[in-house]
Amino acid sequence: MKTTYIIAEAGVNHNGNEDMAFNLVDVAVEAGADAVKFQTFKAENLVTKSADKAAYQKQTTDSAETHFEMLKRLELSHELHSRLITYCKEKKIDFLSSAFDLDSLDFLVNELKLKTLKIPSGEITNGPLLLAHARAGCNLILSTGMSTLAEVEEALGVLAFGFISNKAIKPSKTSFHQAYLSIEGKSLLKERVTILHCTTEYPSPIQEINLNAILTMRSAFGLKVGYSDHSEGITVPIAATAIGAVLIEKHFTLDKTLPGPDHKASLDPDDLYAMVKAIRAVEQAMGDGMKVPMPSELKNKPIARKSLITTRNIKKGEKFTKDNITIKRPGIGISPMQYWHMLGETAKDNFGEDEVVK
Image (cartoon, rainbow, N blue to C red; front, side, top):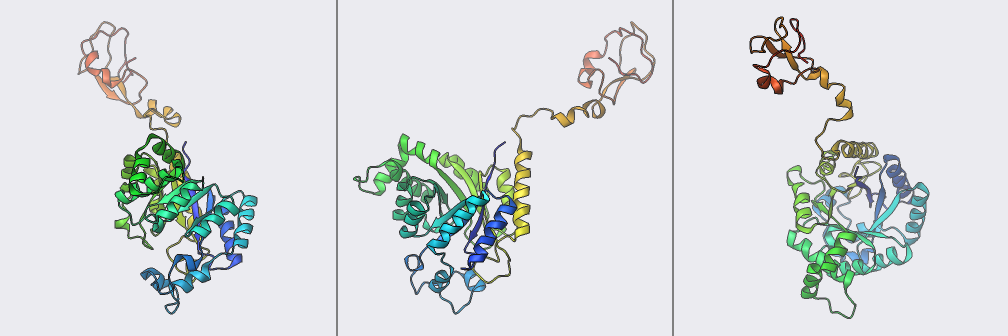
């Protein structure tokens, strides 16, 4: 049975509060998630001081607070990162984070020694950051919200180039494309990259989820494909699991009514638990795809299926006809599939009325 890797996305739902950050880890552990993920950034490296907030952020945060001020308030210190990763090891849950700038990436790789990195959707056109991720030597999860198929391919080209190239080779669109098409590049992408379908809106309108894009990208790139969900509730990630998503990422919070940009579009602890439980049930339900009777079904075959049954007494040597045999339960005798073959055949024994023909 394949196991879907479930990332409980804490993101910035700690509100910059240390206790909340540790409580989020506890909730992810209790829910049965495989990993809890935070976000690592320096506000001054991420956004200009005049940058506008997204519409959903304006609705869920102080309107007088700028985008820069909001992010500055939501930064996690490097020291707290270190304590969180230690705590996650104690709790036996993977610690993940997304780096939004080169300094943060350097910290995650060289200080925290992370082996898997998540590249956010907003960075899929950030060529230098993509290249630095590839050269970090880690496994990569690439989210593709707001992207076209061509943009995803271009990003994969940068990653392939970073995986295989000597730093003396100048980065360029041509060298990225060549790396992407190379046998070595394709092999390393398949080995080290998981791409995530995503709709970058909070919450995502249900009619714009487009789960079939998971199948499209799997076919187009031949890579592992998962799903980063921003929809309301748990229905969509469960459906994504059913069509083969290998990874599910979902925002969660301690309380959906808390102030902050992502709480409203996140799952509360009970819903996170329910989502994980449902995904694990779907995994079991998917099976191996072979159409054969299941063990639990076998006892019901003789009860639910039918046999050839006599409609009157039949003497040995008499022929079976449409007037003296019919089809009824139980299914312990000759199959009704043999009905036409049996017509005109000679009875080898005496049969009473309403008797199973064996």
